[in-house]
Length: 300
Image 1 (cartoon, rainbow, N blue to C red):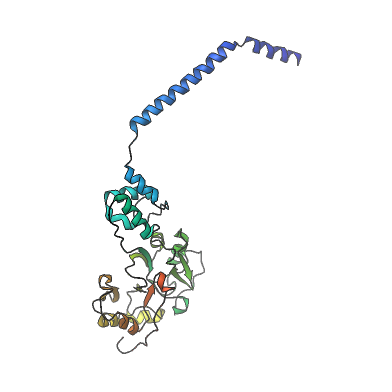
Image 2: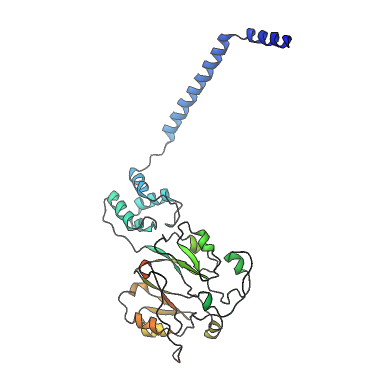
């Protein structure tokens, strides 16, 4: 042990303090040089951002949800400055954000109808007449692989892929059907992407409450009656009662929202639907609501 102590002392005695100081100063000098070089490179290569873009980005919600169709809020801010018509594309920001952006841009605000999720199926569990009971792994993609799941090959599978995809807690499975909470929905489109049956779409809410078609089935009437109580049978009653508002596409009604406020016969068409097909949605609908179902008749 005495030998080790003497040996260590000898090593310390051999170290020149001046050399240590010199090495330390050299390291500091190199560090300072690197800082100068990097600072110069940053100043030379820095891309100056438009202050208007930065101001727009500062008032955005910062959700980066992609509902505007762009990669994130930064990209959206740049797009808005380039094309003012895109101001209404931010669902989380709503109309209040449109006015803030218009003020920054020095233009008059002109908000479009907000974009929101629409579920084109109105069949709850009790409305399903036949179909294979699915007891597999939870998930719509998994249930989709089971032949005859819920009977209808167009309807909601009720396994909640849309619920998991939504970051705003705006859609839930109620009695086997995806139902949108319009007090929370921002129209980001995550639920639309998640649905394997493509029954969810992002649409402009031109009115609130808004009438929507609660079915996507293109099957023949006899088949529909065999698996669903509320599925469309292509009777064309709606198109006859309100021809300006309803047209038929492959035996399924389509609403012409450009004529929504002016078309005659809308309520009569809804009331006469023998399958209780149409649904009112929106914040002012309180919940997805339907009028009383008409009795299927010879007209159907």
